[in-house]
Amino acid sequence: MAWPGAGGPEAVSASRTFATISARLRWLTVAYNRGDLDTLRARYAPDIVVDAGDLWPAGPVQGVDRVLAEFASIFSTFEQVEVIADDYIERGGSIVVPSHWRGTMAGSKSMIEQPLAAVYRVCDGLVSSIQYFHDLGAALAAAEPGPTTAEGP
Image (cartoon, rainbow, N blue to C red):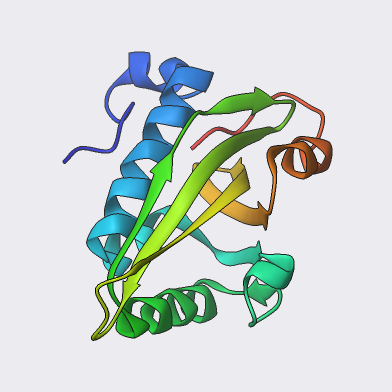
């Protein structure tokens, strides 16, 4: 699957649009749902910061290796894991994504489902930070003002 908006000169200006940024986040969600850590590594900044507050016992995690190790731990704990994005909302310098995370623990038939909202920030074409919140209101409040497309993915 090609990275949305990649290509010639037209793609450079197209990559600075909300539509392209949100398409790229959809693409990364598909990669996460497949457990494709190599794809995530290629599109996450080396110094990415992921903070999920009390949604994630690890606390804030910095660095692509540490973030992917946390994801790998989740993938090994659950037989099935997926994120279902409900929407992509442009909010200043961020993209807010209300979602549902769900997973089935190894050896269990019951699914755990958790609503959440993520705030993504991008810089120089890479995801530089992700914050997870219990609800959309908190995510919208945390989203930074500023142009979303200044340095879109």
